[in-house]
Length: 384
Image: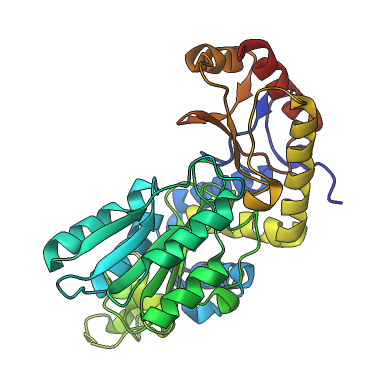
């Protein structure tokens, strides 16, 4: 198994950071790449015309490898919401059609569809979380499949639910979407980099992913992987670098209607960012070196260590098959003093998130068993 990688990060000793689902720490090598980028920009005479393309093309190839998609399918975008906007900009609804989403989906995956439906006369169909289910992931997936019909224009969901790591069966959802002719939009922000994703197998029309969580990258840089049905779609913006022939700086005002090949038409302006691009590229290189399967296996060991430390107490976790190993929720017993629990966790330098009635835990390869033991001790002492 992959050994603990804490030495590659700058987390202080004694800090129990279990909150990668909110914001990842930086690898030392990623920090170094960012500093080098700042220094490069400090005296920009060394930046040549080709450099506006080379760094982003290398990043595009790395991201394609990560999700088993050709580099031609990768668009470089600043946020997952930008990727969702590519979908809502290109998918028009007929009056009476619907868009299916899981209940409590992350807001950035919802608001664009609410606007699209309001403009086109459609409806957003939210599928609520099953309550008190013994197999929550299987039942929620079944409800999403059932909610899709011949009037469904699109279905949008995260790979795992952002509040508690519920694992959706993307294969079953993709199959049903194709049966009814619906577009499938997947938000991989809370799993890509920590849990394997196969673009070819899932066949989404669009996969979007922010880079600052499980990709271990900087804020405000991510990607979208574009399927065949959207690949020739309309970009959100019309920047110079996305147009064919933009490599020739001397002829930029020979305005062209054609775009760079593949998903590059959807790249955000200033995609060549000489600070953020090398940072995200270095982060993805390291993830590929570890192997995503190894990251998930490491997180599984950590989550099992927590289960053992919690013991037979009053806490509830979904069955392992129904939740991701790198992101999961611990449901508190009724009447648990959540504000006091959160305050005590902070006091003891244990960092997690509170989502609804659950403590959301999201370990990574920098965590050790003692981090999970510290969390369990606080919960046992304060939840009663």
